[in-house]
Amino acid sequence: MTASRNPDRLLQRAGVSGNPDRDQHFLVDERVLDRLPTYLPDDADRSHVLEIGGGTGALTDRLLATSDRVTVIERDPDLAAFLRREFADERTAGRLTVIEGDALERDLPTDVTASVSNLPYGVSSEITFRLLPLGVPTVLMFQREFAERMAADSGTGEYGRLSVSAGHYADVAVVEPVPPTAFSPPPAVESAVVRTTPRDPDYEVADEDFFLRFVKAVFTQRRKTVRNAIRNTAHISGLADPDAVVDAAAEATMSKRAGDLTPDDFAVLAGLALEHGVGADG
Ligand SMILES: C[S@@+](CC[C@H](N)C(=O)[O-])C[C@H]1O[C@@H](n2cnc3c(N)ncnc32)[C@H](O)[C@@H]1O
Image (tube, rainbow, N blue to C red; front, side, top):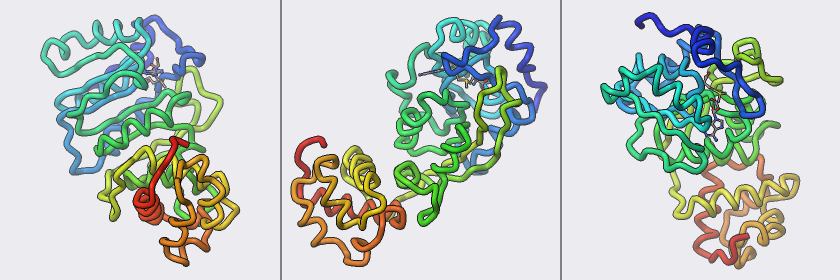
């Protein structure tokens, strides 16, 4: 890799020190920064990489060095303007697009081939569930506890709604724990890098919004059997006839707890539920 921009000097040039109230914790550990793009799968298409929350551009710089084209969405107008100035050459060469705006509200580019981002933790869940349906590999920095729940296997204590929802779209792995000292200012929590590799689910779900709502509903009663959880939470999931779903599902599945069902088990159940009708939005 060619010499990369020094993250501390980028902070100085931008004239910022990070504002935790705006989810601004800038990565200053160069070894972590250099490693992030390398966590994409070896065969990943790096022709157009999306970064959410560009900050002062320390990661943007590494992405420009390892991909053809980068799009950054940055909410802070001063930082978006700084990114445009700092990377003016790459912008005029058509290799960098800076979008000033909220990643929860802006349309994400549909032609991205990967995403690498040090996410704003306050909205990391919402952003993740905008990224995963794009069906591209991602490398994302999260609060460590969130990362571990996202990557958890069924049957473990950390496994829950987040693991099922993410596991429906992708294989999820924690690839590196990152201490608070890697950031400026340091966050109050430990962090971790997660890689998601899109997977072809064995069972497609026709209505993704319903799937996520159904998983959420069933996990509100994780200590009950799935049979009872489906019945008791129809007002949340919006199931019109929960008994019909329970009767149509495999007995072995109905006797388990939510935490023992895989994402594919949930996809099968959601498919049955959709066949038997979904009423109100829950
Ligand atoms: C954790 S910092 C990461 C900055 C930089 N990528 C780095 O690694 O040093 C998160 C960045 O996301 C920006 N941000 C916060 N909320 C955002 C949102 N809803 N949409 C887009 N950017 C956001 C912050 O201004 C900040 O620059």
